[in-house]
Length: 336
Image 1 (cartoon, helix red, strand yellow):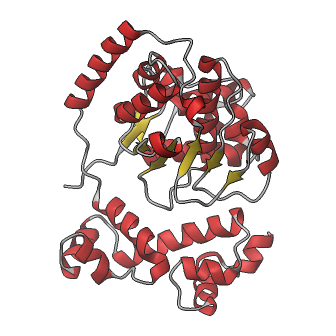
Image 2 (image 1 turned 90 degrees about the horizontal axis):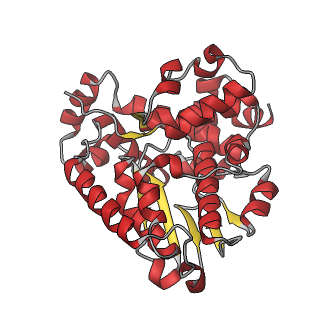
Image 3 (image 1 turned 135 degrees about the vertical axis):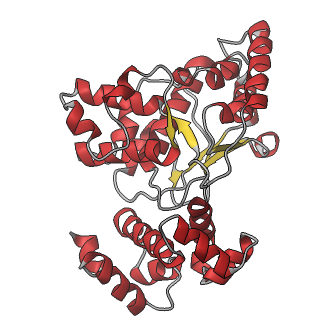
């Protein structure tokens, strides 16, 4: 029996749906083609499959025809809607305490959000990633939540905090200036992680919400929640996609290699994927197709570089595959 897909808070999806309603979109239009329906609007603390949550905001970009949708939606908002994971951070004495607590209790609201503060003392860097397959688009969600995150830090430190550096894992080639104006620094896209970098003095900034007694209570409750929360083992297709994504550019994304990394024989892996209604080749093709569209749409990578990143031996192989998937050559798709 396949394991349940990993979950993620759908609080932001709920706020997004309400915003679209206020803009005049109908419920039918907002939820069409998504994993959600109008019941999301009345849920108190919604949780859903992580991929569905991330995709919901990507579909809002398509609906509104605005590739800055997530960033603009976040203006003036903060992340208190996340509940415990935010409030336990806000009760900390300073900015560093907020970041450490946020990293510690992120699993309360997400099976896929991984926050790393191990470099905080040395470089002032907090980084995060979503452990979802590479073909799950997340640009809008990341730009939305990151903007909320910085809004929160600015408000509760009573400063116009400007990171020393901002990195995002996703690609963006248009409309970068508005983002950099808000963050106050240059942003690096296409990195292997998302991150903020702060100075040592910024990490010591006191929070106006600090409360030592409340912090102890919330930490105790948070530890209890984490102790009771058992992380679901990711489904097989999810794991295969992740391993393929890591191996693509090296040309080593083969059935034998992936099976070995999963500790099983190629025949056993093929049989289990068939039971899931798919195959290794289909997973590989679907991932390549999704990534190729992202590279063509959101980056200035030349076609030969994209072919390499997707694990093709040459540009012609990539051209043939892309035309089979879409009916267009990569160059035609990029210009449409």
